[in-house]
Length: 610
Image (cartoon, rainbow, N blue to C red; front, side, top):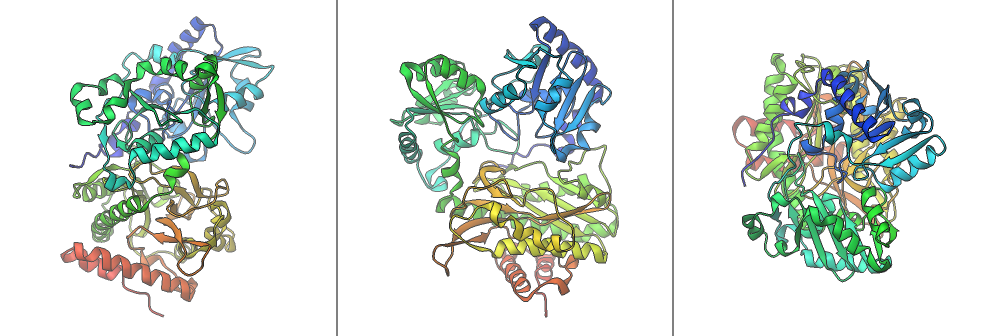
């Protein structure tokens, strides 16, 4: 299958953001609010499928405010507006919106949407929202926080009424994923789901998360950037009857013929509301995830007489436990990625000292090396390419306006990933461009020690990511510094690069289980100077030496910059781990390389000597 990468990030929707558009769009939206008889309107970044990436037709927050980050919500009042973001976007959001009209507010440390809305919506006013874009949990929390001050009202989306040039919804073809890649047939997964529904006392479940639907039905698509998703809805009952509701444009006879026998389960998305009414009839018990389902789904089911069973999406946890076929695919994807990254890092080592490399040139080169592999379908997220001080911005995204030339003596942080036919990758490497300072080498080595500590960890079954997070932070803490992001997130198998419900940080309390794949990415960031992050992906497996214990298998096969290591800080087991890791990279990757790249890899993976 040929590579179908999107344009580089600097040519993306983010680059088209223009603060000059904010004023006329706010004016038009307020006219709609007045016509609807409401005093405010909520605009979330999310669509009905809660994806990290949304298609252009769902980018309402960006359309009105100009902000293109992956998380946020705006409150539009009759006179003032606010954009609520998290700490990742404190620099990006003010640069993309009109701050004379929109207050940018960072959520955290007591600041919440509920506590701030009263500053934008008049007392006893009506705050409208699109029930397809908010979850029952969100609406319940806001209703409680705003009780006696503001009334919430569901309405048809007011942004859609002013978005005259709104792009058409995506209608990419649905493809079937073979059982040799999935390791389990869709019929087998549906049988397991039916068993789970019976255990919960539920007659049926409604699914809206694309990763759940794609995994359950063994399908893939390309409706959103960076993830092979099919956007739609699915219903499954305890007798394994399933229906998939997708946009009618996907339902041409040719496309339906290509996905037999799944085609018999496919219905136009326009039929979904009627299906909810039928599903909820006769007092049936229907499982709905209050944290991810649209409020509109819950309301329709209740109106039809259903009893809601509010539980976590029952597909999420089974999906996170990769089977042997999925793990084999992930290993293959990381091997292919290791070949591409070896070519890229060899090119970087030769080109960086010239002082001519820009952040955009680095992104473009990395994408080009990955494109050489025919089974590479897409990037798994927009590449983070931060030179010098830009590397200290944890989720920095380069644009033409911010594009920076890497100067000799600076650090370069590149966080990237790809979607291969076989699996999903995510890797971060920090590289030196010339001699590093003692401080940079100290911080890099402490980050490396934390990454190695997680990689070497052996822990009893029942242990959560929250319990091992400190292993990665301990060496930075000893120096009186830390990092303000999680140490790791779950990763899907040829699905989303960020996959719940597990991870490595204080908020992930579910026990880790064999087959789960996580990132391992401690870091250090000195504002205005440099950033450091080292990231590998790991798979949880049963320990071969300690019954009842788990450990990690490292999937990523890419060298770590030895120039940045202060060897005096490494303990013998850490040195041994790094030498063994580099030997494995050399053994698995070098046979696929030739010439100068192979020579570079041999040197980059040479063992550290005592």
